Length: 317
Image (cartoon, rainbow, N blue to C red; front, side, top):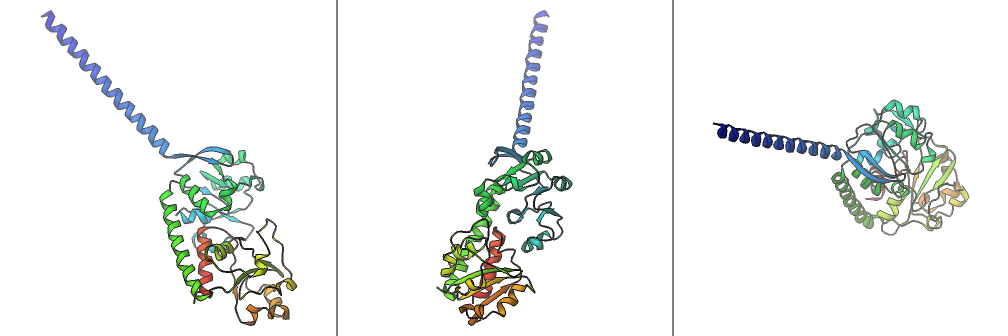
């Protein structure tokens, strides 16, 4: 009887130990899955401020002046860049109901929008607040200079941060297909004829360099030929200097796009100028006025698509 009870006690001990081991394993697996789940909601990336860990499931995002990239990835920001009443008009179809935030990111405005992710350009000193100020509000990513200056790089980096790598690849491939089609079309309709872009604001004129904003799409991607005056401008500098009306007389372009709001004084000045009217584009009726310059004065996938649309509307047939 004693031996039987001893055996039963041993069996009970073994069974209890087994249960505890299984329970421990189960709890361990649960914790591992929990840790894995938490890690899946975060991403560690390199930034201008070093390595940072960010939430990959953020929904309340502020990325001033880079809403183009967010929208290209199917993400709507919680606030949109503005300078007073000046907006990125070409994005307003998607952002018309989104509140504005001033371009220099006042801390109190940022707080009001309660972001869970802030994305800033590399020139952090241009903002009203400091990096530490914004970090106290939400995880903050500061782009490196190469990311700020390249919308393609932005797509890649934003895709990584927001867990949308596949979307980034897809929209970029679609864009590249559009560029290829447009380039082939323009090679037939424009060939080697030269094209220039001028922004008229007030009574001043700014001639786009080959790599100024979306002019890079025109020249580098679509393969359109710039006139000599544009070639001689060299690379775009941070400070953009106006060009005189007399200098514009040297613009031997076959086609000219003029970016000017409706009623802009500069258009009247050109219409009344014998100097301008004697240029090849004006003489041949190949001057095209675009009232919305916003996509031309920005860089982004959507801006580039809109620029291609503008170019094909006037030069594609």
